[in-house]
Image (cartoon, rainbow, N blue to C red; front, side, top):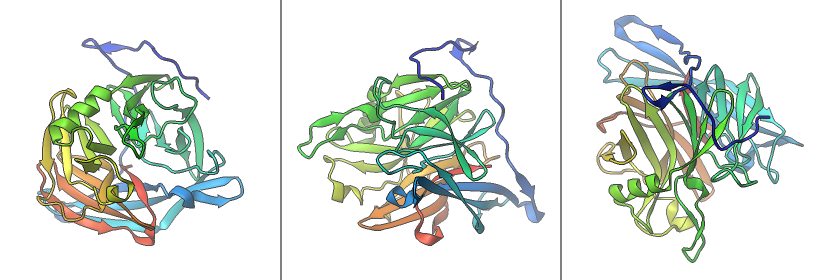
Length: 336
């Protein structure tokens, strides 16, 4: 397993660090009437339901197809449940593991993070092979990082968490670890990045300043748009309350070219389902990163559900929330 270090050297392009990595692969099928189909892969974070058998924990991958018309105005998503596959591992933390929160292909590896153990896995068939352990916060802790999102920028893999402080019932800050981001090289060298000011600035501009909060599980960098994209899972103008938080889902799309200036778009106008929040997204290929396919998660009491939606970055919805079957909680989605 690769060790963690605080700094590294890398090639530079125009003064910016850059890693040369194997390009991403996509499977595309052109159909009559200008239709084009892309292959999707979704993965579960089933929380306490991941325990498959003694000393084995599992996640489920599901394959699907997204078809879009020539004018980029109509979208259809079909899932192939018969191809569902269990992915297993023996790694756990206090009896929990394989709570996989995102998917990304990086330098030829299909990667997925376990938000319970901090392990970043390479997915190979029905096995999750450990690649890197990510520890929480600035890199000087022994606890695993609760990774919620992955993205690639300048050839580096970025891994982040909720992007907000954790507070106790009295409102006092317990830890700021979720506000640190990891930058990972193709050789597995990890750098801890302090994004505390970034996340606080973002939520203030969006109208959710302290003691309010934004929580993030869906973040991507776009090389084409040259911007960061954030789809917050939750948004509140008041202090965190566990019960109230279940209905604090958002329809916000926040973008920024430099993590200093932020633009906010409301997707689909008025928020219709506050119990659903964004958990992952990917850009639909060949759309100049202007169309997004996203997953939403619902965790209300003991009820969990997942939904898929497609929309333009101007907020126009192309596919309204469509529920995934079997009450599995899917929290990672990626074109493969």
